[in-house]
Amino acid sequence: MTRLHRLVGFLGAVVLGLTTVAVTAPAQAGRHTWPRGQVTYFDATKDKGAVAAAAAMWNDSGVKVHFRKIGNRRKADILIRNTHNVPMGCGSGYATVGYLGGRQGYVNILHGSAKDGQICAWPGQTLVMAHELGHVLGLNHTDRRCSIMNTSHTNGVAPTGCLGDDLGRPGRWWCRGPAQKDLAVLQKMYGGKAKPVRADPWCDAVPRIPASGPVTAVIDEYGGGLTLALSRAPEPALPAWLPEWGFGAPGYEVHVTPGACSATQGEDSTTVVDANVWTVPVGGVETVTTYAELPPGVSCVTVWQFDRAANYALAPATTLVTYTPEPLVRLAQPWADAASQPAQRLNGVRPAVVRFDR
Image (cartoon, rainbow, N blue to C red; front, side, top):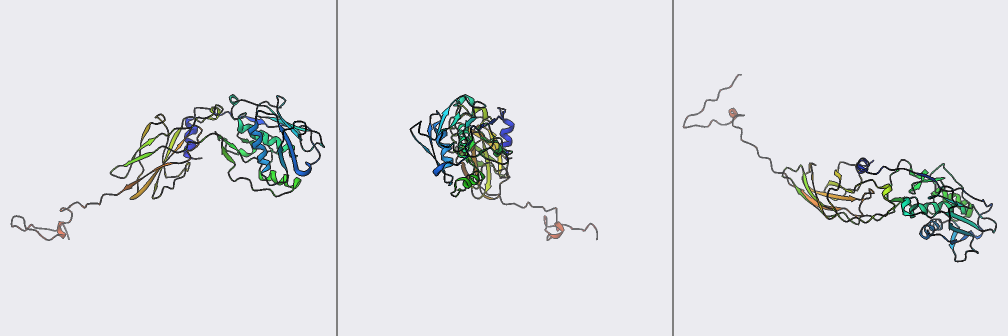
């Protein structure tokens, strides 16, 4: 766990209520895969973006099966609609499984609102729709591993089996969709060659701060501290559904690294010299004094802003400082080793230098 996440976890003003929602209860099951590897659908929902994104997850898999949207409700292989006929309300759905021999299948999903949080905002709706379309293709539930076909998701963020110990992903969501093993099962059913899934399964669900505000730094004369002036950059407005997952106040993280500006946000290393929340409004300047002993030469000060959802800015602010130690000056010590010095005359009289002992 990074210093930042310990900090925001401690300072969090909102207690996270983790809600696990059953994603679906499969309806009628078909016995066959879809002929010609194509499934046409008619979208009668208010969740057009979620439906299109979920269909694209399966269409981009490399497996020889494809969802195609058409404008004829009656001729579509499946009808996707908003309804209250779902097992657990917001964040859950209901779908037919596999090819039904010519009969029209369906996907039911409840259209939620922003007040219901991320569960029924577009990230959660996309997860539920991707799960339901997996049923349409013939996949069943599994809770033995991370899968889009897990029986539940948590807070509309990710399938429950994919979270592990990482429960705090405010403002982010599991955009990977099908797992690699999901695609392997589908490949056996339809053929083709499954593509590798995206390496980073997480995507931003809210806009990031474009760049951290400018920073200036003044080094003290002893090289043991810096006085920083951090400008607080504007932060994009967050959607109404996010406060449920808000960790609290936005803030900043300061790194100091010798030489190049090589610091990475969130690293819990000795280069992190400060992490705190803002005490000034947007546009204000925060004065910060740090006590990190600087090596001789050039060091880089890197500042990463983060929002109240604990997401870092897309770019840091940096400035360079140069510490040049003062040269050491040896003080005169005539009393220390007078016996080793040539005898000097004082007012014409040679001083007597006598050993203490042999």
